[in-house]
Structures are given as C-alpha cells and as structure tokens.
Image 1 (spheres, rainbow, N blue to C red):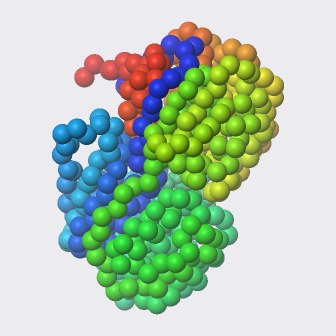
Image 2 (cartoon, rainbow, N blue to C red):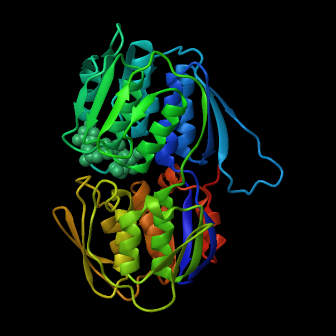
Length: 431
Ligand code: UD1
C-alpha cells in the first residue's frame, strides 16, 4: 500500500486550487439515474470515491463519458463528465460495490423513484460511528415505499410509484435530505421536508434537480417543498467548490504559518470555521480569486469548538482543527456532536506528541510548542488529513500509512502541498 512521507517544519506559501466538492459530486452523479437524458457535470474532482461511484452507476446501466483535457487547461482543472442513464438495466446495488462507500446507498432513491423498485446493500464507508440508515428508509416509507431488509440488503418497492408526503427529520441528516429530494422529485404530488439539512451540497443537488425540471423551493433552509413531476430531463451543472478541502488547507496554513491563496474557495461555504480560524490567530481575507489565509509568526491561540450541522462548525473539519489545536499555546476543548466515534485520529496524533484526553464526546487538547514526526496510520478520510497537517508542522519525518483513505477525498494532495514548499512525497508500493 502506498505511504506518504512528510518532512515538516516549513511554512506553506503559494496557491492551492480548490477542487469540486466530493460531497456534492457524489449525490449529483447519483441524480443522473433519475433521467433517461444526459446529465453533464463540470468541475468533478478526480477522486477514488468518484471512480467507485462510476462503477456502481455503470452496473445500473449508466454510460459514463469523460471529456478529454483541453489545450491550456490547468492540471488542477476539474473534470467534465457526461452521465447517461437511458436504460436502467439493473436495480440491484451489490454489497461488493456499495460496502466501500456510504454515499452509494443513496442510489436507492432514484432507482425506486424511476423504476418502482430497488435492492441495495446496507452501506459501508468511514468507520466513524454506527451510521444507521433508519432515517433514509423512513423517507422512502413516508413517500409510499414498502421496505424490507433481507440478507444485508434493503428491498424497496413502490410498483405504483412514489407519492408525496410529509417528512419530519428527528435529526438533521445530509444523506436523508438528499434521499428525500431525489425521491420526492419524481413522486406524485406535494412533499414537505421539515428539519432538512442546510448544507451547501444539499442546495447544490437541489439546484441541479431544478435544472433537470424538478420543482423544489426552500433548499438551503430547514424547510423544503417539492412538487413532484412525472419525468426529469438532462442538464448541465457545475459542482460547487469543496469547502472541506478549503478548510483543511486553511487549518494547515494556520498551523505551519505562511501565506496561501486558496483559489476558488468561498467564504460563504465556511461561515463559522473561518471565524474560528481567525480567533486562533490566522488572517483570512476574501479576494476575487478565493480565500487568502496567512499566519505570520505569533503563537496559535486555543479556541473551543463544537461540531454542528451547517452553518455550524463542520464535523468534517473536526480532526483537522484538532491537529491545529495540538500546536496551540494552551488548552482547547473540541466537542463532536454529529458522529459518536469520530476520534480515531486522537491516538495517531498522540504519536506525533499531541496531548489529547477524551471525555465522552469531548476531546481536551493540551497544545504543545513542537510536535515530532513519527510513523502514523490513516484511519478514515478526514482523520488521515489531520495527520498530514500535524506532520507538516512537526519536526522531522512522518510516514503516513494507508493513504488510500486520503485518495478517496483529497485530489492531488501531495502536488498541491509541494507547490507551496512542503516536503511531501508518495512512496509507491511496487506493483
Ligand atoms: C454526510 C457527508 C459526511 C459528513 C456528514 C455530516 C457525504 C458523502 N458525506 O454524510 O462527510 O460528515 O454528512 O455532515 O456527503 N443518521 C441517523 N440515521 C440515518 C442517517 C443518519 O441516525 O438514517 C445520523 C448519523 O449517524 C449522524 C447524523 O445522523 O449521527 C448525521 O449524518 P448524515 O448527515 O446523514 O451523514 P451522511 O449523509 O452519511
């Protein structure tokens, strides 16, 4: 398995282009199942999860075409892909394909809405908690589907078509809201979603569905209304920039010091996180090209954070922020409220010298003036990149093992960091 070698201690200076958001690209790609016409997505990131989802969609009969590079394209320019689900040939999403990525479970909604049936394996994904699908199944039942679980598969049936209904989420769920949007777009009649997720990726999916002919209002707020239509058509949509990638590199610069332009990053996608980073001592300016993040000397100030649904502090930045706080001048408390087991990075950060104590859903981080490089193991997507951040600031060499987690969600990570002066290289496993 590939590893990443990092020699820390240098500030980051330069430009990091921010890719299209993984968490927007995945539901957008899945939405292609809703129409027999072509859905064209631009600014799709080059990631292992995107490739894996292509395999899953291909199994349902979706033709996938990647547009070639154009003269003058930057190596970081996003991909344009055409997805064509003219005929759905198979409504089963098998365990071998779905178990690797939780988001692939969401195919259940468009398959059911368009074909009246779906058989989808219960999902896998990052080991960050139990991650049930009860709320997603509740959505489908509220819209008239009959659901059974058999042999690790969810069997969903709505032979006469889905019908609109009222969905009131007991807990804010991004995947649940995506599921509701896709299923209700082709359901008969009116659907009301209460306590919907307000994440920008939900709004991005809704915007694309509207371009495809769906009737949706209120996406981006906690109340969404949908008037079902009988069919959707093709469309072209640009994937929004990745706020988690931008926040990750912002944490890195706040830790190592330096001055980096996060090209294409948008402040409105990271409302609280940018405030928090400013409180730690980083300077963040909005420019026409993106967000400019710098820290010119001075100590990193400790700041307490609690993760929350958008517009709160994203759980997907919790690990990266913990890395930053490991180098702060004092003690901070980081409370995780979304996933109960999302502290796998704590023991790995400790190998680099971080002092972190866990008390239930709170991590108490006692900042250290210097971390030291060590061999560490990537455990999940965001946890892995927190180790990269800590390693960039640590003295000496760090080897990050199991980097396939990083490849799931961070496009050209080594290249982007190298361009800003970091000593980062991939040690490839001989084939
Ligand atoms: C998405 C993101 C993930 C992010 C998370 C929260 C993608 C591909 N993934 O994951 O990166 O960390 O949102 O912002 O977009 N829950 C239930 N029952 C359900 C569904 C969820 O109890 O049926 C719980 C979860 O266990 C969790 C909470 O609801 O505690 C939020 O999860 P959810 O928003 O659904 O996460 P995902 O959509 O899986």
